[in-house]
Length: 526
Image 1 (tube, rainbow, N blue to C red):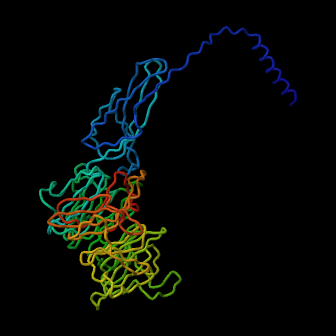
Image 2: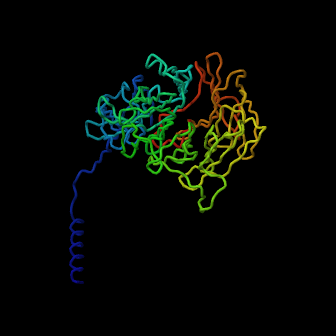
């Protein structure tokens, strides 16, 4: 072994001696490799579909002084952007081959990767810069208002640039949607099949229920995807009273007086669907239900009262329907039961504080008119008794004669209500109430809507908000006041006042960055 090592060392030493004697006459005058520099491009751009032109004029230079370049602009839809599926292939579409780009943004809304590639013809060196392009439509962002037009329904959009697109249904169809409005919903990851192409389409959907009909609209252009007449798999629509359509975690939920429906789809995880509904979910696979008109979405489930048996139920994120036990999590019987309730449910809202979803249900006594109770529930997937306590509302409370209700969902355990056209706040912990006098809110106008509206899912913190909203109506016109909240109360002057024609009864905010998993960042109450 030692002999082998000595032989190897001898060979290495000989090689070093030979190289030391070698006369190197090579030319070592090195030249710096030319580099390409681009200037004048931003990291991101936002343009309106079928309206804007993307004009970019970068400056391109090279350290070696070369000026003979090839240019290539490409665009591809970003995977998982909220409007696409992971099944979308990355296809680089060439949109320009000159240094200056003038690209008419006649493409669908969504999030795109924009790439600028420069090649030096003399040495074939390349450089590239990737930017993001957010393509929106005039319907992509803003506050949607559901309006009662006098036994008919329409929708206004107050866009982020303060412009107004009013009476959208009238402009689309030549008439308002018939019958009085019931609810306004939002599914930011809705999937359906385009009957003209037989291909899946993934978009954001605005959902409207009236007393007799349903309309699911594609927010990209506000075209109608489905109505109540064609939103069922069997092709035949049941006789029912529609209540609400919403994003129910891994699917689309729909509730009516005939039951709770579920359409499975989760486009971000390649689970595509038609967006149509089958039969209502049943308890234990055989018990039908009759949902109360009020319900709440929380903890990825939808909770409602079954009027057939006076019991609370929840529809989970997979579309299964569950009832509750009268026992608590320790197997002990609780005094207030979630079953056999005979009172009349007038309002059901949720509050999410300390990472805990709490439900507040306002019941009127079945025998004594004007006598009310507040049920406090834990909204979760535990099948044990969710009712934490029942509070009898004081006889002197203005809450007994109220006609509009809402709860603060994020920052305070309070309920808002309207009695005799005056605004009140009820403390759900102290069981006290006080009259609210929002700054600059007009008096003598009918209050038609109150709600806590928020959006907390934007990466840009300046776009997030948490507002207490009041709508008023007078002489055929509405005003909607948006206030910041402090301690549950409207704070300071209104951040914004929206005005238009009609009577506002519901409101939702839409943001371009919303995706299928954004449902916890905006209110799903209706």
